[in-house]
Amino acid sequence: MPQNKKEIQSFSGFSGYYRKHIKYFASIARTLYKLCDKDTAFEMTVYRVKALESLRQALSTAPLLLITDFKLPFKLYIDASGDGLGATLHQAQIINDKSVEGPICFISRQIKPTEARYRAIQIEFLFLVCALEKLN
Image (cartoon, rainbow, N blue to C red):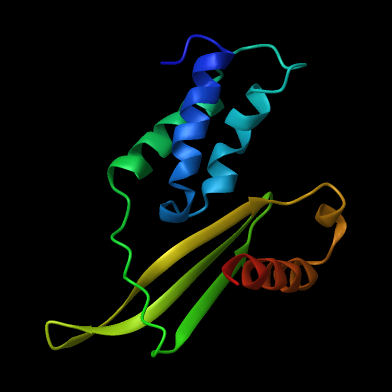
């Protein structure tokens, strides 16, 4: 269990490196990133411990990502929740003579305070544009 902000920052940096492998990374890590703010007192609340454990679990069981085949079509799935945005880029590929659809990467980020006032459909369209820009 992290004992101070420096240890939280270290874990956040490590887990952030693997964010493409973790579905809803931004939503899960949000509370830990807020703990790194200089104006926030270090306190490991139950909510923060759960976030830390969720990230540890996700890092140890991250899904196998497919290797991108640019000759095949892609599918982009987008979801907006209360405080985060998530997208998964999928592709159907033939593996061992079977058609398998699987993830190529995960994209996520937090909803900004001004975006929180948008309607759900507006947020999803906004993130569609953001996800496509990130994938470009």
